[in-house]
Image (tube, rainbow, N blue to C red; front, side):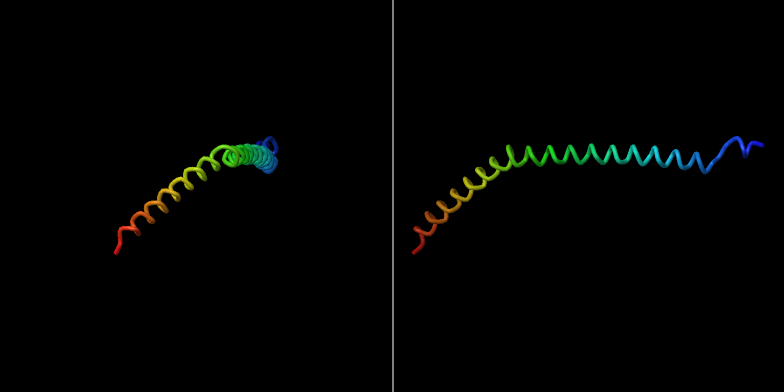
Length: 72
């Protein structure tokens, strides 16, 4: 009689479908966060990093030329 009261297969199915919905929602939120971060990186961080890198490259090139001029 108790076996007919609780249908474990249906319960498993309902739990799995709820977990699947929750997993899809979390995956969607993670995807949105990564997309927003990528956009911000392209617009804000990348130009600053490029400018910083070019500055170091220029300084290293100048130092290299000055160092080369001291050699015999």
